[in-house]
Amino acid sequence: MHMLQHSPFNPWRPAFRLLGASAGQANWLPAFDIAETDGAVVLRGDLPGIPQEDIEVRVEDDVLTVRGERKRAEKAEGVARSERAFGRFERAFRLADSIDADGVKASFTNGVLELTLPKREPADTSRLIPIN
Image (cartoon, rainbow, N blue to C red; front, side, top):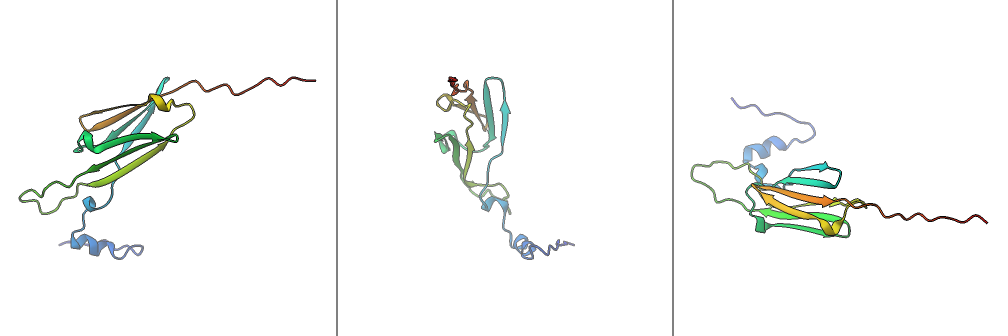
């Protein structure tokens, strides 16, 4: 016996589940970890199944943007339902003043995108005010 959960906040959700809508049909965002060392901030994002040529990393106006697309796989024989996410994605990260945007480096290994954002010494914008 199959029981449906009732939600007064979304009465159509069980109906969509029965119709076979899958998570793979929605937009998705890859997960990123952010770590900080003495000399850099490191972002690691999971992008399994995406070829490197389908990933774009760009820095513009102190915003680091990662864009890409996971293409829908051809339906394999015997698969009745696919729940793996696919489609275009975009993640944006605002860079702190302490990040050297010109020194950002990217690598991609085994489906993991690693971005290294080197830190720079903050500019000393103070000035001595003479006392009259």
